[in-house]
Image (cartoon, rainbow, N blue to C red; front, side):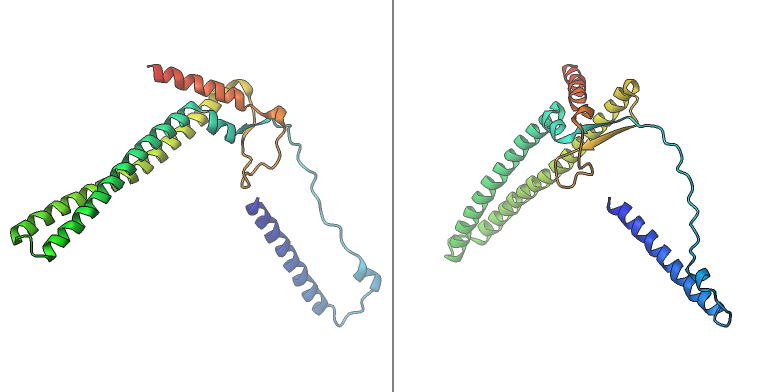
Length: 213
């Protein structure tokens, strides 16, 4: 919508500049001529082309809010990702807290001179190794985010492919994506054009059949 508004605004500005340009130079060229007042008030009618005939379009929409809540593939991805994320987070927190406690005790002993140089070197190596384990958990968490993004893109492709097959019978010109969020490009949708349930039922049937295999 913002893009269309910008195009319209630019067109209006261009027309306004053209009018000013015309008035400026037409006034200079006729300064020494006698001007008929009636002629100066006369305005030429712009040439308006007749609109081309546009055939009626068949438009339907899919409610993304309902689809995201009801699509089994997305629910499985979300459930699996949440469980994996919780596991990583618990490991990171547990190991991180234990590492911090052990390191504080190590420093206390070292400051009191209770550890030999060899013991200090050995413990420092252990702490370095444990810190690397925490870093690996952090990397796994970041990789999980990328995995979720890839699965979400897979879900989008599944939906697009299914709608293409579905539309071989429907022969719709447009299948719009509707959401009740504030950024939805569709502000109003007629319920009679809603094919969400059809799409959801079919795409879930495909996914369940694929899972069984």
